[in-house]
Length: 289
Image 1 (cartoon, one colour):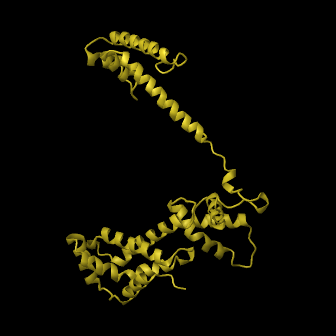
Image 2 (cartoon, one colour):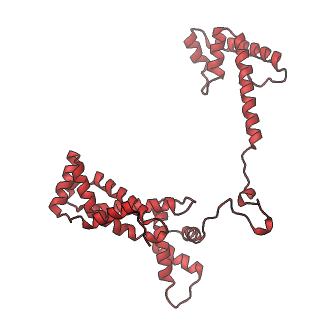
Image 3 (cartoon, one colour):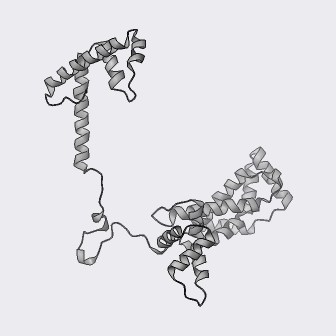
């Protein structure tokens, strides 16, 4: 079975035919890319290490994802390694790049292996990629072992809680199910799993009604504000119609009057607003309270 498209097969062939780099050549290319932004140096460095990308990607091909996509994600990790690599540390680039290649591929698998997103903490990643191997190893002997004992042993080996192991085991063993899939043939056509989901959100008509009511109230209030003087309007807006209402003292300092005078003007303005609103909606007295 072919996992790669024509273009990617050419990339693999080019990678396999690319010459190996000596330690000195690798160091020189890394220096040119880091300090001179030499694109040709990056191209040579990345092409020479595509074998490494392919080798790492091949270890993850049993997760049911396209080998071509795994290689592509590994190549992204390789480029990330190149951008972060510090040649002065005297470490081989391949040693440094391996971690970034593996991390990029693992993150891609975690994002795409299931339509249900799982956690990406270091513990959960370790469980995801090692649980099957450990389970197979611990159950390969002739001695029978219960599921509880197996979970406990895996938790001890991984240094995690048994509950985390049980949760990941359930996730790996249970396939994704579409919400549009029928519950059963006996329920007849048109009965999907999503029909049984309960939502705490308001019904669409309730949401629309709330929006209409809010807009209507805003129009009423804006119209009523027209009866206020400029100073009354400023006080009401800054005291009542902003998220963080101004204090009487702060407004008094701005207007050059005492805070008691601000309170009196505010009280009078609110009364005028109530009277204006009563003319339009006699039963709506809560807007300016």
